[in-house]
Amino acid sequence: MQEFFLATLTGFEKIVFLVSIGLAIEYLRPADKDQPASSIIFNIVWIAINLAMTNLLMIFLGKYIQIGINALGGPLVKIDFPVGVWGWVLQFMIYALLHDFCYYWFHRCQHTWSWFWAHHKFHHTDVHMNASTSFRHHWLENVYRIPYIFIPMGLVNFNGTMPALWFDGLLLWAIFTHMNLRLYMGPLTRVIAGPQVHRIHHSNLPEHKDRNFGAFFPIWDQLFGTYYNPHKDEFPACGTIDNDLTKNMWQANFGVFIDWYRLIWHKRAAPVTVASGAPNHTPD
Image 1: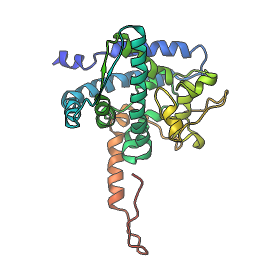
Image 2 (image 1 turned 45 degrees about the vertical axis):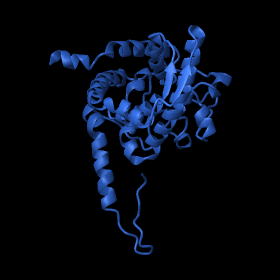
Image 3 (image 1 turned 180 degrees about the horizontal axis):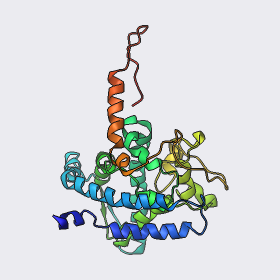
Image 4 (image 1 turned 90 degrees about the vertical axis):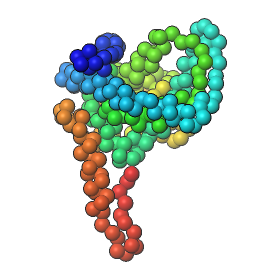
């Protein structure tokens, strides 16, 4: 039994190591100075919880990824890549663009549907965003990623060899975009979703609400009207507009279920508008 639970934490050491690199780099030029160590410790502990719970869930739900791909007749598209460095770079770029397209809509739904926001807001209640925030997601999130990201991405067959470090690169990118780093990227700001672009997404200012959803490139935000191009010295404070806070691990794990209960109860208790005869709907 002990070995089983230890297996659910596979990859924890690597993630913490990569996060530590990010924390060390951002220490040199922080956007938000004097961040408390307690917020980082909280996130590190959460990484272990999130990893263990996600791996447990995938034992039961992971099979539905392939079932969904098969049900849609996938893979529908096959892309062959040349062997060598340029093949790796090309594959990474195309994979990142397609992943970003799926992630963009998934992420946008998380912010516009109350049901999804109930668990995603935990990620945004970190008022001291830093490299450790990148893995501060509720463990239910990967369940939603199955229909939004994993199955659609499985409809494309990437035929080409890739070094194992490629996957570490994806982890590093997630860490990079969340770094507490005062880094202005100039013209590249419109091309690459760096720390400043993503910090706008985590801003607690109303003018930044629901902006910059992309994970790798801002192209989808630009196409669909949600891009905000930060000024050179624009590094706003982070958190939610409503100043929501996650105060303990109990709330982090179970707060979503309380919010879901409230959403269901609120809809059931919604009064009927006598004048029109139609119910007053709450936002989805």
